[in-house]
Length: 101
Image 1 (cartoon, rainbow, N blue to C red):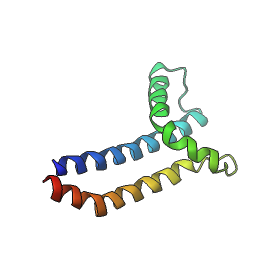
Image 2 (cartoon, helix red, strand yellow):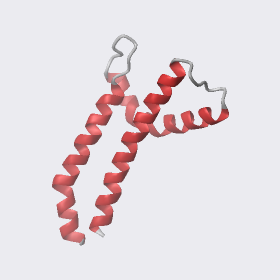
Image 3 (cartoon, one colour):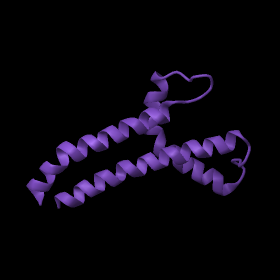
Image 4 (cartoon, rainbow, N blue to C red):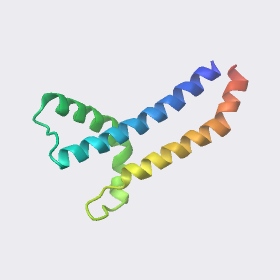
């Protein structure tokens, strides 16, 4: 059971990192007019990524100012998620695996 919880938490963190990367790439594609939100698929993917990543990114967007129109909050959030993942794997994961098996 402990291995399953560790696997689940680690994969959720990694999935959130990939969602943030996909959101950043989609925003660049929209900004450079490669794709636009008039396309129904792009609109639905963009809406999904926005709904998933907004709770993580919004607090940092309020704190970190935009640097010349460039939003650096995704980079900060990715670094923090990596830190949390490493911290979890080094400290909490061994305890969970020993306690729950």
